[in-house]
Image (cartoon, rainbow, N blue to C red; front, top):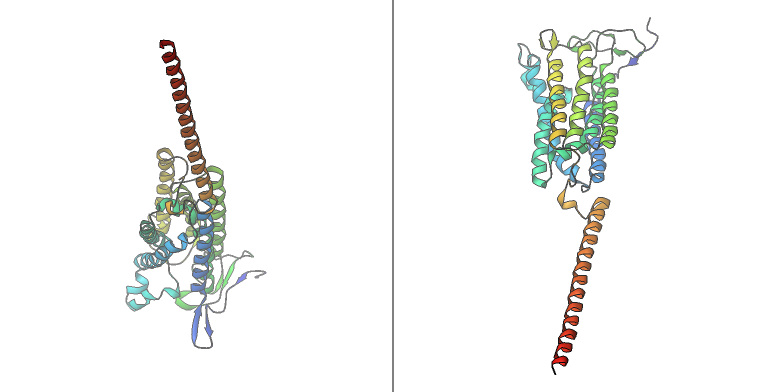
Length: 324
């Protein structure tokens, strides 16, 4: 007997005026992007950057990320689009769901690199600023799977199970582990972890981003293990499990090597922003203080020189009087 469960939405598409379709999945992604940019902007300014820089680079990163996420999904689940009886055109219907975070981060990173190059700022510093925001964006985006009634886990009768009512695409109505909820909560925890660690240890040179990647992979491994949707397997593990393992190890290796080679945090993350905001004012004040100190020393030297000249003149006059 089902005493409690999380109900699924009756639909994931809503009509505006009965004409324009509004897809909940897309809205979740859009909200997540805005949240990531907002938080990233605040963190970037706190690091000494200029307001708006995160959004300017996101203009490059987000489209690249969406393309990369879709490519990863289509390549790893090609049978959904290119098998007999399937329509390959569906591979372009991103609004129906299907984004691989691994491809999104990889291609999004390429887009961010292009944007950073155009602005003359270091990519690792920008990545550190947006890392917690990306985790929160994923937390929001996962609710798109709830609207689409997809990517759930094994059957369960737990009171927080999600109830699947759709029978489309081979779904079997019933109650299942809400893996979308598990991952959403995990991503919120990752965001909080990165924020805390960044404040506590002054992470820099991409280490805050690497921490986000490692922490996310740790959670993704066990959440992925619970899912029952069709996926390619290798040595008894789903492809995404192996990806999570490899990426986790690379992220940890990067943190260790980076801490040894480039300890501490970048002093300047956006050269053009020096002079703007609290960090810029502090830098300007320091430079002004150094300038005043140099001018003072120069003045003292000049006065000392004038005094020496005067003493020399008096001495010369005295010697001249003695001779006379």
